[in-house]
View 1 (tube, one colour):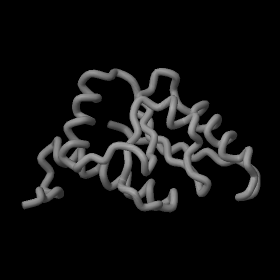
View 2 (cartoon, one colour; view 1 turned 135 degrees about the vertical axis):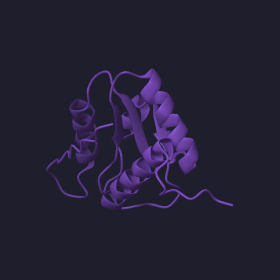
View 3 (cartoon, rainbow, N blue to C red; view 1 turned 90 degrees about the horizontal axis):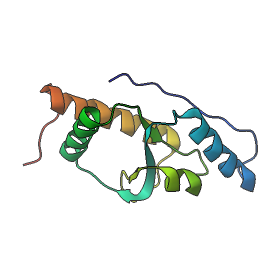
View 4 (cartoon, rainbow, N blue to C red; view 1 turned 90 degrees about the vertical axis):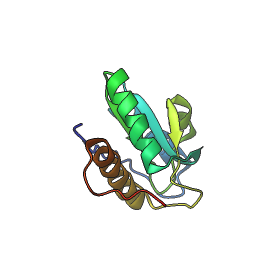
Length: 126
């Protein structure tokens, strides 16, 4: 499963109300039209590592198109991106900087794929 990181940058200050909307439009525009969009938002569904692994396996087996994870900037994710996503995933109720959210996503993808392949990285909770 190849992973490609596509940063989307928009000009404007942190208090520019149009910036989040423009970022959302650019995020959606950068994604393939046939993608399975997953918005990362604290109001979304939480999953265990095992559940995420099983879910990604099902998607890989049943969905022949790319899976796209949307991460908002310092302003958060535009509501239009959340509404147009096929699912919303949460890493918990805490607010994370977008750079840290990306790192957590990468680690969880590695963990999920490791579970699928039987790599000795993930340790189940007892």
